Length: 352
Image (tube, rainbow, N blue to C red):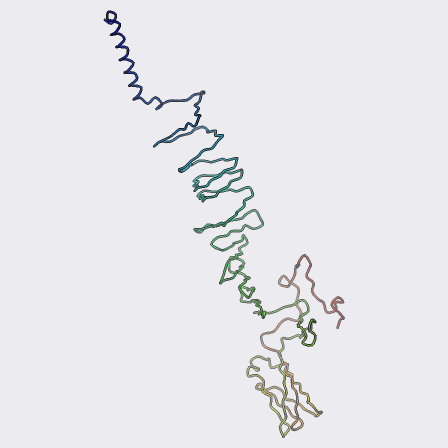
């Protein structure tokens, strides 16, 4: 028995037992299933925790007063709530919701596949690109606004988009009246084909023109530089046409004046007027009615006369009087009510 061994043998047996315990401890993994209670764990003096081919799973929370440095990928499927400043210098992919209540500085690429809600002021110091059929929607006003594929759509159905190097504003989902601006011209067009086009040299109106004010012509007079010459337009109860010129009577005192070849197709037969007047000397001269696009004059042989033809054209009929309805020009311009001119309006000059 051990009690009868010599002291040297007992000491050697104790050394062997300790050696076997040290070898077993060297081959063991004591932290494989370890737990940390209220005491916690502290790493200091530059110590680090290295995870190789594994991971860290946190069910509670991590309180960091310094920095968390990640050289790989940070992935999360839940919410990230950040109340302080955040700085990301690399690519960031967020598959869930991102709720940011403080300032956020992003110098790299931000790729968001989920919903993003911005409730504070957003300042862009570079371009904002929307690709792949994405859109930008602005709500909260009287009408929502959506920008998609280069088209700005309003909740009322109107659209603003690029067209042929210019811009086009279309009402009622593309089928109503439209306004457009191209290099060198602007205009408006109705779905019925009526339009107004303004260029640097002229204004073209397709359809009727109705004015509730004076119609005047303004130019710089050739003899008075720096002044403006203004002429008013004459008015008529019909859509009239007129032609004038001079002609000479032959040796028999007769002359035939041919009007434009389209005159008969353009002018109504009723209400045609031919006025003739002698030139340079006084003599009697008279004219016939217009027939087959021409009229004849008779007077002093060899005499010269001037002539004027007036007629009413086809396609220009209108009512002389009508009741005011919703189609008339009403409303305000710059908060001032529109005012129709009356015949005897003292603010417009003397009554006729």
